[in-house]
Amino acid sequence: MNNPIPYGRQHITEEDIAAVVSTLKSDYLTQGPKITEFEEAFANYVGSEYAIAVSNGTAALHLCAMALNIQPGDKVITTPITFAASANCVRYCGGEVVFADIDPDTYLLDIDNVRKLLEAEPKGTYKGIVPVDFAGRAVDLEAFKKLAEEYDLWIIEDSCHAPGGFFTDSKNQKQFCGNGNFADLAIFSFHPVKHIASGEGGMITTNDEKLYEKLLQLRTHGIVKQDNKYQNSIDFAVGSSVSSDEVENYPAWYMEMQDLGYNYRLTDFQAALGNNQLKRADEGIVKRRALASKYKNAFENKNFLKGQSGVIEGHAYHLFILEVENRFGLYNYLRENKIFAQIHYIPCHLMPYYRDLGWQEGDLPVAEQYYKNCISLPMFPTLTEDEQEFVIDKVNSFYED
Ligand SMILES: *Cc1c(COP(=O)(O)O)cnc(C)c1O
Image (cartoon, rainbow, N blue to C red):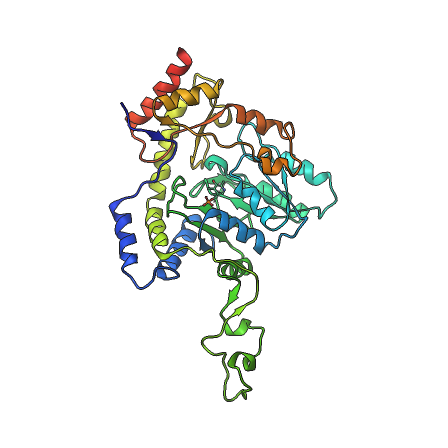
């Protein structure tokens, strides 16, 4: 009997453990040097100017929504085939989520549907777009950026599935997910099922210095600790009237809460883990691509690979998805064999919370049809050859019986 095979699993090495232990023995458990190290290495990895480590991917999305100043009633477009947090961040700020249907050939937000929504309303109705590099496949952000400029929209790229993924732009350049060349902000998650694990954890990347500074502030309660940014007077800060030749600087204890922020910090020992994992990120993608190509070969004569035919350059393969008949039967059969496939995703607009806001079945037919047949097979770098063959055999034997 085989060991249980999940759809995704973290990989923790002795070196990862040593990195965490050494941070636990250091002076800093949080807000120490490991955070900066991780941020710099991550920015370098994706090719962005700035990176801000946060407590999880959802916090990253929330801070992005706040930094872009989403206000009650603001309309923001996203895909229904994503983890709910991509949409929820708009709701945290009181904005309105408008879901647009996916492209059946890529499972990504369909830009033509987004364009139709934008054309149907006066300019200014929509404020932004949250495209998702779903399953690890990079969105063509060059095209989205063009559309966004036309309608004066910002873009938050939800890149939780795709660190290390890229698309090829019109000048034949590789554009890595989260590099900030097209999106205003991009976000990542370090939940154990994602490519890089830190327990819980997240990252925001950007090339925009103003947004970067705003995000740093919002990550820590909206607090500013920088002399030239204070709004209150030095007199007030000192606590008594002082002459300027007596006191030129604000006292060392002084700080100001200038905005309503949160505590969305990552700890140093989580950053140490994430940073050590990051060193193996490329290795992990190579393995994921090899697994994907083996699955593709195995199923090439079936009609399972609807949304991923051909070679897809730059795919980071967070997920490997089949579209099958009798998905319920296959899912149960795999479970009986201790293969824990998963479904990504139940369309977000049909979650009871979004139904209560007016969404209903039939609104997004491509996403709804996709949901009926999709199933994610095991996909993680430590999946062994034997395990993958076992998975392939079981899928095939289910359809042969
Ligand atoms: C995992 C994930 C998130 C949320 O990240 P957490 O770290 O779990 O909060 C957001 N969007 C997508 C697409 C995800 O896969």
